[in-house]
Amino acid sequence: MSTARLRDLRVFPGFGLLSVGCVVFLYAPIVVLAIYSFNDGRSVTRWAGFSFRWYQTVFANQNIQTAAINSVVIAVIAATVATVFALGAAIATVNGKKGGGEGAYVVLTFPLMVPEIVTAVASLVFFVAVGISLGFATILIAHIVFCIPFAYLPIKARLESMDATLPSAAADLYASPAKAFLRITLPLLLPGLVSGWLLAFIISLDDFIITALVAGPGATTLPLHIYGMLRLGMTPEVNAISTLMLAASTVLVLISGLLGQAGRKH
Amino acid sequence: MSARPLALSSRIPPGLAHAGLLWPSLGIILAFMVAPIAIMLTYSFLVPGAYGGVEWTFSTAAYEQILFERDFLDDSLTFTPDYLIIVARSLTQATVATLLCLVISVPTAYYIATRSDRVKNIWLFLITIPYWVNLLIRTIALLFVLRDDGPINSALIDVGVIGQPLALSYNGFAISLGLIYSFLPFMVLPLYSAFERFDFRLLEAAYDLYASRKVAFFRIVLPVMRPGLIAGSLLVFIPSVGSYLAPDILGGGKTLMIGNLIGTQFQAARNWPFGAALSMILLTITLIVLLWLARRAAQQQQSN
Image (tube, rainbow over all chains, first blue to last red; front, side, top):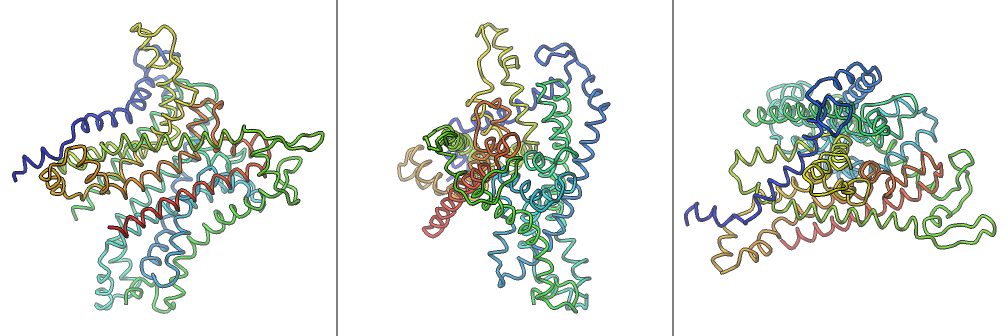
């Protein structure tokens, strides 16, 4: 049977149109929001010409700057700590399947199973109960906890697909275990580490509800600040700052996509 | 042999090294996630303190409050459906979101899986980007287009199709749309990966045996997608049922779901035991759905 006939058989009418509809649905609201962030008028409804004025307002706002810096600092620290912890856990769970591997896996992925709002209020209650005052530190601890599974899963997947005999070969060539790890295992693991770190970083930047409950009155992050702005209604500033975050996420996806492609070529 | 090369130093016994690698992650999750939930379970059986917090008196009042209202004067209990309605609404909204995501995602995932490799990657990339975009920002974007004076209503009024703006925002419809919009990529991606390795000769064989397109799709294609259907349904249902942002922002704070009710008990209302009881109910619902679907997935694997 010819491939042309087979290709034709695979087609179900209307599926292509639905897929296009699906992508349009996913993008239309964010594209419209981004377009209106360049609207010159105070009103968000009527188009009054192109302008960067709302971006200038956002960049001049000291509170937004502080919140943005907090968000990035928390995301970098949380993603890094979570990745280091997850690397250890991945090595331990992939190698030592004999000793309680199943149980360890359940605990490591537990934060993915609990609804976010439950994690949020449980963390709040816990920090209050043990007397840790709410603020930057509590946000950081909570973020490290929920970032661990997001870093762990890509690293574990990469480790499982790796040729396990390579470090042994290095050992046979008189490499010390530390050297074999640094020169063989770590470079091979790098794509998994990078995607785990990026995923954890994005998840940390993204979080609203857990941060909102454990932040207390002192510390704030960008999503918390935007949510606060939204209490006053949809304003052009909200559109502008949302568009900036949109752009930041897109750049990160592009970077991870390019890194992934580079990883595949090697 | 396999454990030795990854041990950090030959002087550390492998068992200790293994524990040293595993326990930082396990410890932090047990301490800051499992222990807090155990505390919540305890709190759900206590009574609320005067200024927030709890008093250490055993009571099942928090769970009773979900079904009954206690009269201040004679302490009698009267049935009240208010909270039950909120729980039911959460389950309904999550189920609707899951089903509609399935309806959109099955054809989309199938279509993507049947493209050439290059085109496939572009489609996957397009589906992945919204998955990375901040959930708050996406919810705000949806509110922006649905508002009474938003672009959809303005355009319809300008064209003259409607005189008054349609009530697209601040209601149950907006929440449904918000949940689908938030979690749609979570459904498309697992369906696609379940479907990627489909053997199209099966479809050809079905047609040779006089199957119609409809029969071929439902009897041949859909069963292959089942692991993806289960994974995708979990990934949409679980965050939907406990969602906070979609009901809060798109429902306008009037149409509550259980997530918002829990949030309120810990912030404004300061009734921690009631909030804790609601959290336990949400967690139980989540775990039941998780176990049920996991068991179905295991059965599926056995029958294959």
